[in-house]
Image (cartoon, rainbow, N blue to C red; front, side):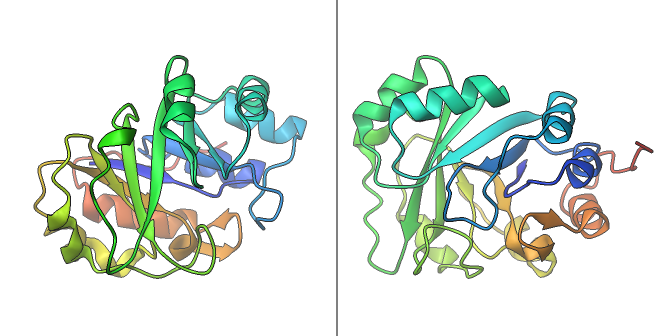
Length: 212
């Protein structure tokens, strides 16, 4: 199961998180977000030392802006969290792994064939904000997804959800995305809490923290 930790922004915190067995570290490039990432030498150094893929999260941003941020921050993956078109996914997928996000409510239509060139879909909870609402949608709705693109599950996931995650039985379920459920404040993750969560969720993973 792939694990993505999103909404990272502080260099020292990132160094600690980077020592955990995660697959993706997510950085938000949205000015209105309290987790928006700004350039700093310390943060860049910590990002360059990561052993996992670096994900840039964007909302309705033009392709030139996304590519500029990707080059500056050394991003491997682009996560599109707005109303982006299939055409933009196609354009970005030539150079990057692409995750397309969908906000899921009770009446969500899981027919997503037009976005099939994305590497992953990410199913988040429909709410007032594009993300970070801290709530879950009804996970039993996932049975309505019949597509071939693997998906990542997001939306209000916290330490208490291990058993429910482990019970998900869907052939395209690829991993989880965590954020606000493991924070002491926006952008600052509770490293020890994440460590214990990963240890229980993926017991074969190495979760020893390394001195940095």
